[in-house]
Length: 317
Image (cartoon, rainbow, N blue to C red; front, side, top):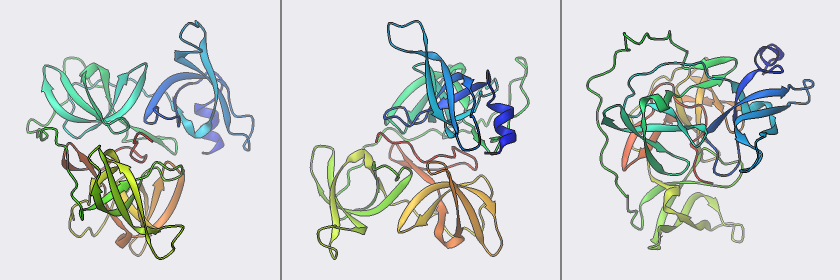
């Protein structure tokens, strides 16, 4: 992050939103104020004061915390939305903060069902409790902000929004090829290829990885017991993709693992730069090592729209 952006948006007194890497809070943003900006280019710590979080349940003093600069973004500008679409990425106001989710049902009467990947929960919200999900990337909002609509001229929406399938619990039988999400630190947004060995009948499965070997026996593939929410079927083939665009969400194959990222630059000779938010890193890939990002929601595959969240899928790790 450039010094110009830091001095412009994260100076003392600046209104910000703060993310957390703590267990159970990934994918949430809380309003706050900068108390002490970064001291220099080497020290990226920022002292912030939360607006909705207190020091304790009985305290009347707002919580202050020192956070990394990468955990901050400017306060999201107010923006009125009258309608949201199925599969649209949103932030929902819940428990004193904004939580990243996806619209899974249009309930009518200004109500929507929103699915949260981090907790595998689906909750209901009114339109006023939602906002379009945006990411702050290199000093710009993605997708870009649009001109505020007036109350008497609501924005147009697609009248042919499709409805999702009913909730569906997928049963993975032995021999089924799957992909596994790991909760190990450093592997956020990673999906490992595996095969189901056994259904343990308590929402757990015994799986065998296809690219990870057992530390005790180098020639033997690792087997592990995982929770059902860590699994998804092998994503279906979406056909040959001859080009990706900037801001398009993809999955990149790196060291035998599929990582969720966002195209940050289209390079020459069919190469792409991909940004991975969890690692705050950009790597280069051939188009043959990229695939369309899809989400497994309620027993149905949903292809991510062009500009969605720029962070890996948040799961309850």
